[in-house]
Length: 228
Image (cartoon, rainbow, N blue to C red; front, side, top):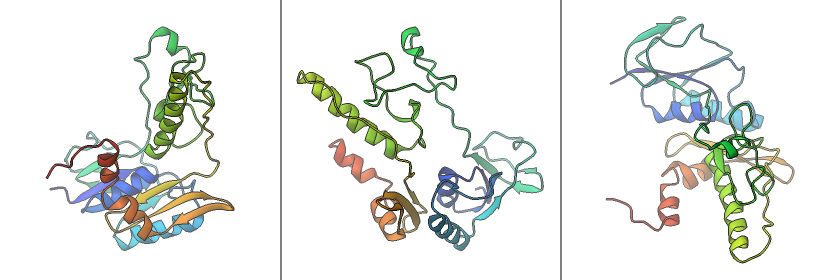
């Protein structure tokens, strides 16, 4: 079993991954602040919880090179004085849209994302929609946002089936939101409020997401039975 772990990336993915591991964990990120896009109160509480769990944060630290082993592979290594038995990458996500045909590929940005309208149509196509990470919307790529995209697309498809003009639209919020569990009983969150960011307390995050990572919600959504 790996005893020391390095997570490279201090965004919400890196923070959540750190607590998902029971070993000694070090989070490394060149940014000076963990989850910098979020409210100061939320970040302070997150840092406190990570400190209490023994998670070592090395913010403002950029490794001179990636570890010499593949991410997720157990093998002891040392980079810039940091020794660990395994490491995980929590940064640099790239979307894969190379599978698109020539006509749809014309809607791709230079970075590979798909340009969409306010109704989430693929740009130039009234009967094709895009949701989730592949969209070029100015927001973090998170499952919660993808679910909101799906609601808009479902409403617009249903309108077309009824012979009506689709009217549902989606606008990214200028205030980012997240539910960031740290194990089944910890975590912190943020939602847009009427007067700015609204910090979600630990108890709410744990109850809503941390204890089952939304598994129960999707079991109900897809009308399936949980395996014993």
